[in-house]
Length: 165
Image (cartoon, rainbow, N blue to C red; front, side):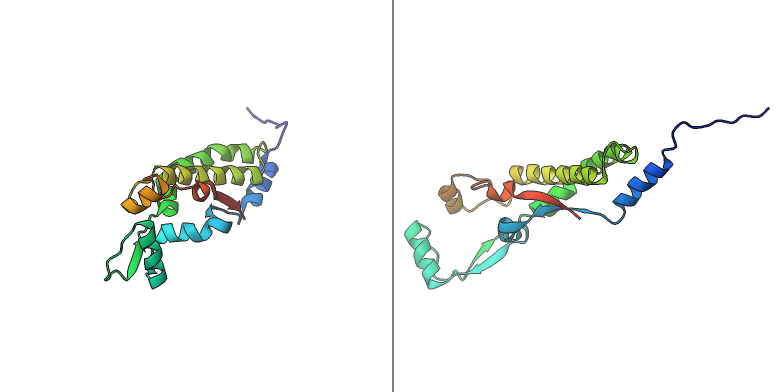
């Protein structure tokens, strides 16, 4: 007995093309453009040297620094790295769920990578919005009216996006 079959549609070349289109491409999520400097300050923290002019300004604003205070320290708040790390499993699962659509030709490689970028940016934004530690200095809370360390105007969190390369 002999068995043979003929396929009506050979999808292997389409799948190979889709895989080839993804080869070497990547997605980066983060803060790009105008808010990148502020994101870097919060992501890694920084020490700001207190000048006489700064000391006088802060005094007029109601923050009275000790004479011995040489630096103002903004603590590290790793919202980009930790936001990605905490969302990684869900991001990978989302990408795995979409991959069959790319291989079947229902999604282009650009659509797939954009969707993965949106997953990444969304998880980082959610993490940054919920971040509460380390807390703001009480003076900062009074000035901006919020205890969320990364939320003031919303520009920083709103600028979290992705780039497909």
